[in-house]
Image: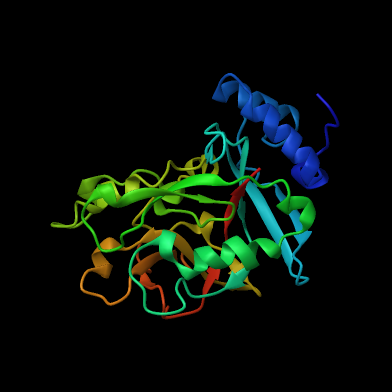
Length: 270
């Protein structure tokens, strides 16, 4: 143990990276949570429901806020071992389209993924940027498809959440007739993060816990998950969004022309 602080916000990014390496090396998930508890990153019940946050400024002066969503939940690209800590932004880093022009395909080919890898990453303070590790993310990178084989990996330092990482497994019976194939497409893009599991976030419903705001108003924000059924017959891939009501399924829109402003709240691993 070294340098235990009262809360997440009290640690530097270097200190959090050291703690992350301890959690990464834990022999089990239970032991990882014990380590997190010792550093006050979870509460006395090893839960993230206290929703502690860490605040800092982006290079453009915007005040940013992130929170921990899971431990040992992602796989690092370079070493194929679990990332110790996964964070998600609670505040947007930008408002952008998913694609600058009409585009098919998925997250892998998107303009927003390219922007996050360059300009988005440059927004972060150097103290954070140098601690971030690339994670391997699974996504339907075809767009309009009924084949779960379209789910392929990308390696990203900043990435958007998938529907399954937010909402967990979606059984085939939760979808309408002839759309049961969406179960495999949506449910294979990563496991639900601990925080969202504890908040009982589910698909096909409103979820107040994942409602986010900008300038005091509720917002739409992107998922990296394409809406496979909406994309059929469309010149551009539709992407799912979390709505102003916290529904992560019902607000899909073409990546190049969202009906309303859509914000960017990425995740990252250290």
